[in-house]
Image 1 (cartoon, helix red, strand yellow):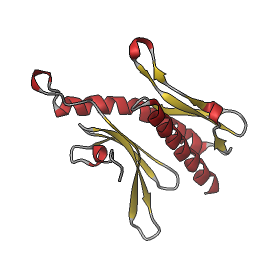
Image 2 (cartoon, one colour; image 1 turned 60 degrees about the vertical axis):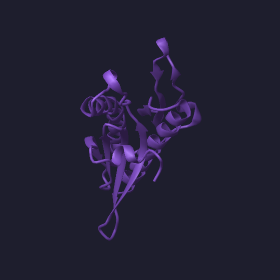
Image 3 (tube, rainbow, N blue to C red; image 1 turned 30 degrees about the horizontal axis):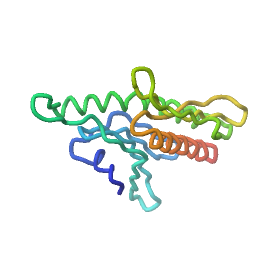
Image 4 (cartoon, one colour; image 1 turned 90 degrees about the horizontal axis):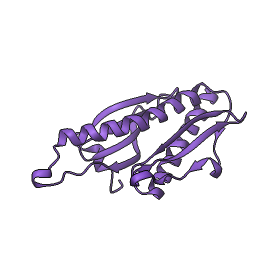
Length: 170
């Protein structure tokens, strides 16, 4: 368990959206007052399930005193931020599952986010293409530092590649 796993395994965590791959693997976007994350659930041959947290990040801070932010509004903020990122993952995963071509990416397909206009954080993304050169989708995140964003984007892209591999082998 990493030091951020608690943000999606707390009692207040709620599933915001989900995707089920053709092989039965489920991906759930989970938001809590502490943060956000995506959980992958695989059903093993013996019927047991294995849950893996693909990425997790701390969310909006609680603050104190008169500036205190309630757990409900933190969960709502974190949920809304995660919904847009998971929508891109879900669209790319659906396209990967439907594709008969092999999907992949190169280092040239990785876009580093960083700071933007008025210090707004831009997302780091990975653009996935199939063997015919068609764009399948773009996944990424703007949660965390730039190196964390790139790692999370690559993890999401790798999961989509695995979805594509499993759907073409079925």
